[in-house]
Length: 371
Image (cartoon, rainbow, N blue to C red):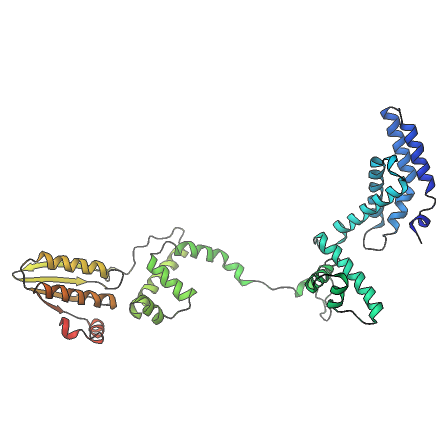
């Protein structure tokens, strides 16, 4: 059935539009408004019949009639008699409003208009190909018919599911007393840790660079303490001590309203200190604290200064009794001091090696050189 047959008689509205146009010519504004209202009322059956064509598609009939009437008003306001039949123009305008309504309100989940239109085209192509091929067409068949990529066909099919999504309050199949929403997702334990993660991130920024790097290698790089020690050129014991110190400070800071200042807690016995005295022809230098790559450069400068300030003194006694830890950088300092003393014809002797330091010196093969 054609649109003309479905909306008969069409001539009445066209004649009424012509009569209204002639009556409005030269009339005042109030008369034109009255004629407009009368014409809209006369054309309401047209809007009603067009709205009924879209019933049963998930939208209330009252809403569809309201949209059709709005389209009718737009058609009356915009109609130009010189451009042809009013009925044809009104049908196009009202139908456009109805389709726009379905695009904007008919879909349960909003998707781009391109995908809405493509989803309809894919649906029509699937129906036509099913009749032609006598089987369910594949995505490749539909893509070839529409001249698009297979990926676009699949995207359109996924978007089509958004037209009438299943309610989360619907009864779940196979689960007595449970709704679909009860089966979706689960509590995320990570949500409770968001505040703690943000706080820890800010606290880590307060730590010295060395401690930050160790924490990063341990907990983000998943390296063992031995691997970190090898990477940083220090002992595993030293890494363990630094890691424990940083974690202790972080725990205290997390439990307090204001973070305590970083002072290197529990580090007073391991800070490097150099004390030099000159007795006769002997330079007595006492070193206390840990020696690693972070302070080896300062220790070398202090020892070279002591050797230089000693003038004509012929012996240097380097006491490491207070050094619990010595890494490869510290060994390098001892080698550099031996060479500097040899150039100055100064005899250097290293004494007071603790067991761990003794082990490191022996492993480096320098026991005879610096003993």
